[in-house]
Each structure stands twice: as structure tokens, then as C-alpha cells.
Amino acid sequence: MKKVTKKNSRRRFIKQNLLTGAGAMLGISSVSAFFPGRKGKDINTPAILGGAPVLSSPQKPKWSGWPIWDPQTDEPQVLDVLRSGVWSRARVVTQFENEWAKTIGAKRCLTVVNGTNAMICSLVNLNIGGGDEVIIPPYTFIATPQAVLQTGAMPIFVDTDPETFQIDVNKIEEKITPRTRAILPVHIGGLPSDMERIMQIAQKYNLVVVEDACQAWLAEINHKKMGTFGNAGCFSFQNSKNIPIGEGGAIVSDDEEFMDRCYSYHNYGISHGSMIEKYGSGPAMFGTKLRMTEYQAAIGLAQLKRLEGQTVTRNENAAYLKSQIGNIPGIKPYKLYDHVTRAAFHIFFFRYQKEEFKGLSRAQFLKALNAEGVPCSGGYATLNDKPYLGNAFQSKNFKKMYPDEMLDFKRYVERNHCPQNDRLCNEEAVWFMQELLLGPRSDMDYIAAAINKIYRNAEAIKKS
Ligand SMILES: Cc1ncc(COP(=O)(O)O)c(C=O)c1O
Image (tube, rainbow, N blue to C red; front, side):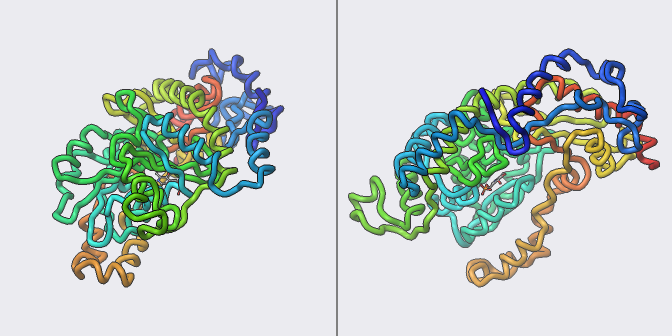
């Protein structure tokens, strides 16, 4: 099958696959012995200090570009929509919704314009709004707290479990107040949060649960998909995501009445399903417009065909990479909760502990690893102490909805202090994005060899 990616030409894709077998049997220690460095450069010297990267071209991994598509099967699907002249929500969107509901194991799915609005729509239609508190983790994308603020509710941050990178379930109950109405766990990186414990807490305190599964397509606990544990599950199909459409989002749920309200809300408040009998077929509730287009759905259907196979590859490569780097001192790969049967691996996380690397800072480590040809980053900055919150609290609506003491930003920041998360964001987290997990196993060996090389040369890099 021919595939195209944004960065990769077809020829490059084929070449990449031809290399799959070549490096597959390489162990970490054998890598530098097997491949000579670039002419004139020493392969044992870190690339950041002028040496050659671990492997020299052409053996160096050709990381997958993103998104990937197949011109033979995907392009006709999109062209059909274009040529039909029906571009607004119709048959193809419904087909994609049915497929996504089936894939996730939910009764219903509603597509919307993006993951952010999937969460806003879910929260609003579960009656979350002004004066309410919603519990969220701080280790997430800005869209999560913004979605809560958009409803008029106040995000309350619960610290991160540094081993799993997920919300620390042991710290949720201490943040519950009489105003708490919802928990919004985020399966960050596509690794499942501890949903069994979260649902127990939600039941105990009568809270609704909206899952931010925007990075967790096909991830599972006990073979049950993320997004199906709470009252609603929200997904994103933005361009970088494991199922990319450019923009797009979805809500899944088994609650038919809730889904009818969400549908109505996403279509100007016009009655839908069970609402029609009660209110007639015209506008029945307040709403907005969040409809997905037909050509987005056509891309979604095409992408969906690849998701299962890519997810298997990401899981295999992640487990292998974890086994290869987990014994390097100072490298602490993600941990999965006990009942996780599959993760989505939108991000491969590990913690970097500089004490084991002769005090080499994370910033220097990231630079050195990038220089070896391994794209990586330090990931998210903290979100629980930034001005967007204080400014939201000074808005007209928030001033009307909350007592002054709750809007005092200094007090809010103290109440929402998350020291473990600060450490992850500011000092320890290292990320590889999902594309790095799509290549051959030898790519994982390359990453492990590069980290080992930096470990061996930490002192010299630090001094440079
Ligand atoms: C964890 C998380 N939540 C929410 C979103 C928002 O999704 P979107 O960009 O589709 O609005 C994203 C994606 O960007 C995300 O990564």
C-alpha cells in the first residue's frame, strides 16, 4: 500500500520500510560498534560536542512524518464528498459517528468541531456551570481548564502521580467541596487514568465524570475503552492526533437523553430525538453551532482504518523502548495502572533525573538528545498558576457568580499548588511523540543507544 505523509514522500516511506529489517537485531551496545561514524567524526563523542550521531546516514531512523494518508483509498473518499456538493453535516458525518461509537463501544457518538468544544458541550449538558467546581489534573493541554472556564465553572487542580503522569487519585477527595460537581480526568499521553478509582469517588460524592480522552483513542482498562467509563467521553481529531482530521472532535455516551441535548446544543438548540415529542421540532434549548463537515468525516473514516494497526505498533514499540531504557540510571519511563490492557501512546513519557547524569540539566539533556537525531521535548508547562485564570476570574460573569475570596488569584494559586506536577513540568518530564513509535524496532534501539551515549558522556556535555 502506498502512503504519503506530510514530510515523507512515497519513496522515502518505502525506503524506511526496507530499512526495517536491517537494524532490527541491533542491541544497544552493538550499535556504535556496528556503524562507523560520519567521515571525520567520532561516533563515541556526543553529537552536541561535534561527534557523529549514534548512527550515521543512511542507517539513522527516518522518523515518520504526520499525518499519513493513502492516496489510493483516501483521496477518492474525499473527492466523492467534494463532487457531491454536500459539504455540510449529512450522511458521511453520520457514518463516521456510527463507526466511532462502534469502535469505542458506546451507544452514541456526536461529532463536533474539536475536542475543546466536545468538553464544553458535555459539561454544559450535564448541567455544569457558574458557581460549580470541576476537578482536573494540571498535567494536560490548556484546552482542559479553558473548557471548564467556558462553562462558568472553576477548575480545581489535583496533583499529578509522577509515576503514571495521570491525576493522583489519592489526592482527589481532599479537594472536594460543597461546590464540586464534576471530575474531568485527562488520559494524558493516551495512558489511561485510574478510572475504576475515579468512578468510585464520583459515585461516593454524586459527581458527574467527563473524560478528556482527547489523546486516548483505543486505550483500555480491562478491555473497556477510555471514554466509556464516565457520563461522557471526549475525543480530539486535530492534526497531530493519532487519528488526524485537521480539526474535529467527538462525544461518546450511553445516555440517550444527554446525547439528544448535546445534538441540539451543537445545532443551534434545535430539538433532537426524544426532545421533539416534548418541545416540537423547532428551537428547544440554548445552543450554538459545532457541526462537523462531510469532508472532515470522509478523512476521519479513511484514518480510522489505520488506527488499530498503528495502535498495535505503538504499544509494541513503547513496551520495547521502555524495556531498553528503563535500566539506565536516572531514566524512569511511564508506569501503567494495573488493569490497563492497552494505551494509545500519543506521547511516550519518561522522567529524567539529572542527579544520575552528573547534574546535567534537563534542557542540556534534551539538546544533546535532539543533536543525536532523536526529536524530544520537555512537554507541558504548568497550567495551575498562569494569568489566564486570574483574568477569567476578573470577568463580569465570574464576578457575578463567585464570592470575592474565591476570585483572589493568590489564594487560588495556593489552594491549587501541585508540587509533584511542578517538578514534572519544570525539571523531569521528557516526551517522544507518537510518530517515533511507528517505525521499526531498530528505531527504539537507536533511541536507547542515544540516551546511553549521553549517560556515558554526561560530565563532558555538562562542562561544555
Ligand atoms: C489533552 C487534550 N485535551 C483537549 C484537547 C483539545 O482538543 P482540540 O485541539 O481538538 O480542541 C487536546 C488537543 O489538542 C488535548 O491534547
